[in-house]
Amino acid sequence: MFNVLLVDDESHALSGIRRTFPWEDFGFIVACATTDSSEAAEVLKRGDIDLAFVDVKMPVISGLDLIHMARRNSLPTEFIIVSGYSDFPMAQDAIRHKVLDYCIKPIRAARAREILRNACMHLAVKAEERSRGKLREALLHPEIMEPWFRPLEGSYQAFILRGAGDGSCPSFLSGRRPYGISLPEEAVYIVRSPEPIAVESSGCASSETVGIGGRVTELSDVSRSVGQAREALESAHLYPKERVFPYSPIRVAKIKGLALRLIRETNAGDPEKEEALLGDLAGTMRSFLFSERELDHLQASLIQALAPDMSISRFDDIDGYCFYIGKMLAGRPRKGKGTAEERMGRILEFVNENAGNRLSLDLIARKFHMNPKYAGEYFKKGAGTTFSRYLLEARMRTAKRLLLDPSKTLKEIASETGFEYFHFCRTFKKYTGTSPSRYRHGGSDGRH
Image (tube, rainbow, N blue to C red; front, side, top):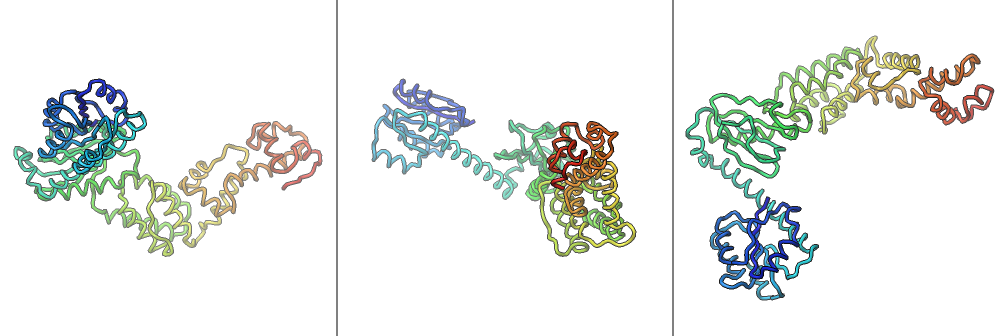
């Protein structure tokens, strides 16, 4: 919240300003409202007023005098001048002192909202610049933090917390005496401790994510730990259920091992083993919390070996990466008895034999060891049509065959082809151009 000071020597005007402006809507709170400009000067000197509305002409100390005093003392307050009449020279003087606005009483509600909206945006930017400046100064001149850490021992480590609503110190740093700097979108904490600090996801709120930098022995190197914590958070969007992201250098051996397994299974020409590995890929990535840079390395290895015409891409989630890697594997020529054509044939045979049951792409993916995100494109590429369309055609072929059996009722046929009765009648007519009854009695098969 931003603290506001209201100053006007006329009490009714002061009350009008207080009533007209929707303070809370824009994050303001009226810390002081007074008709005494001397009192206002003392309040300003405290240094905690963000925005002051001052009447231009007041006895003892005018509004412009208050602004001059604040500027001389380097106070952080921004000013909005309120006047009962238009005064061009006075407005020019106000502009020279860089006030945020100059408004004429009485102030209408729409104008009041506009003033607060602009002031809120200005103060938010100013607060962010001030916080970033403080962080930048601390990292460029770490000796600023040295007195804070002097009573403590151990190495230094940075933690970046995002999504914390109240800005309070996180529980996992309780008792650690962190040096903290709050920014609008995150809080940076630097800790000195003789041992690593364990951070559990269970200790974080559902809206919070924590990036953890590496430990450094010298305070002068703490900027490196801050950078690592921020880098760790760059991949947080890939793992929406995770809360804690410790920094890790690129794990070359793990990336190479995973790439070699995928390449080996692809070259072996066994699509089922390949798809089983691909189906486990998302789980593998999540268990290791691979960073975007590590996923770039994985893609580069696979592209070089399997799909030189493809390029490194980035996605919003892990499933996107798995889908893209699946496309690389799908484009690889197959050899040996386990060809993709044979496998597709087994899938279509299964669909035709079970068309009357509850079938879905997820079920197909599980049965044939495929990644569910990849199964739809794989099916369409192999069958030449979408899964839902192929399933419908298989059910309609079955329905036509069963309609030739006079012992079967329409309800029985509907059930055996996976439909409720009325849905079956509507779908059959839409597909063939005629009703099931007319088809059974020799009606035209007008559409297919």
